[in-house]
Image (cartoon, rainbow, N blue to C red; front, side, top):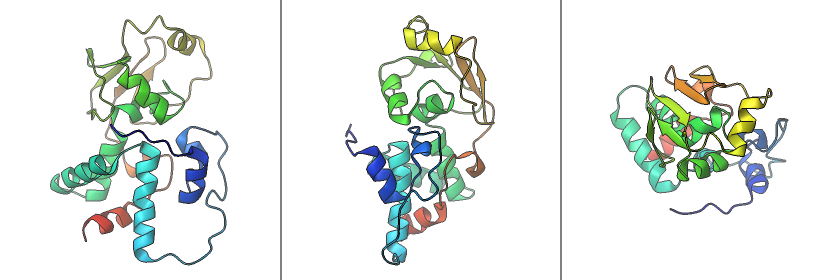
Length: 198
């Protein structure tokens, strides 16, 4: 698997993404992209939007294209299906449940086998969870300092409405399919669809 070594805050500024969406800052940057020097072409806007989503979620091009192709075959609005699939990746779910402070950290925790889905250990960050799936900290990891602290910590981040989390048992459940409104930063998904459908 390719490792993303880009400086996070510099890349956030280039793509116009608030560091808060990456989990690096709790304060939103009003103008994350700085001053625009020239008007972008239609292709440049489409490409930037795709790069922004890939960067925030830590997805490589091959994985992203595969997800787009699955979404386009799934029926319904391709953009909404694509965003739902991206949001339901296990690494993102771990981050959204508050078990990691960034998606990169969540991906590493999943890789190291700290989580189970429906009682089975899963170490694949791109694993797609479904409605009804229960994501929990593996029993061998519960005693680790970071997870012990989470049980005691009152400042546990609020999970989105499509996830239900139990702080005491360190587990969460997927209660609904995430929608575009559940995503914590702005995505012009129609630009990504236009780019791939050329």
